[in-house]
Every structure is written in C-alpha cells, then in structure tokens.
Image (cartoon, rainbow, N blue to C red):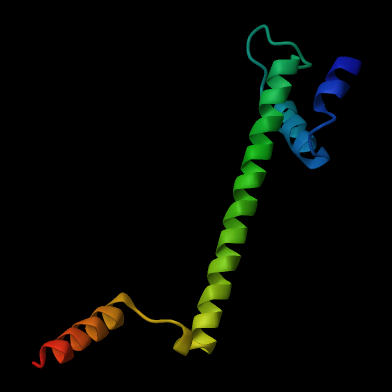
Length: 99
C-alpha cells in the first residue's frame, strides 16, 4: 500500500477517487485480481486527469468566447469584419488612382 500511496499522492484526490470508482464497478476479467495492479490504477487516474483537464479547457475556452461575444455586442465599434477592411482598402486604392 505504501508503494501505491507514494505513486498516487501527486494526483488530485478527485481524479484518484473517480478512477478507483470506475475500476471498482466494472466487471473483472478472467483471472484478474480484485485489487488492480499499480499500472492499471495509474492509467485510470491519468485518464481521469486528462478528461478533467480537457473539460476545464473547454469550459475556459467557451467562457472566453462568451466574453468576446458579449464585448462585441456591447462595443461593436471595436470590431470590424474582413469584408469591411477589404472594402475600405479597395476604396482607398480607387481614391489614389482617381477612379
């Protein structure tokens, strides 16, 4: 148990709990022991951590996008479209040529 504890102490408690819960509720394979080997446990914990990090990143990204959309709604003068930029550029070019 000390070996297990020393290996998993660097992971977040919720990641470890979720991994253990998933391992505990799945049916055991033929010849599989009731208590998983360290490698199986670490793989499950890392999977949980990866899933959590991906969810956090997706939420952070969605929050940032929402903040930008809100800012665009409140301050449309700060933003321009590529079409507007190209239209203005073409207009200046025409003015330079005297068209």
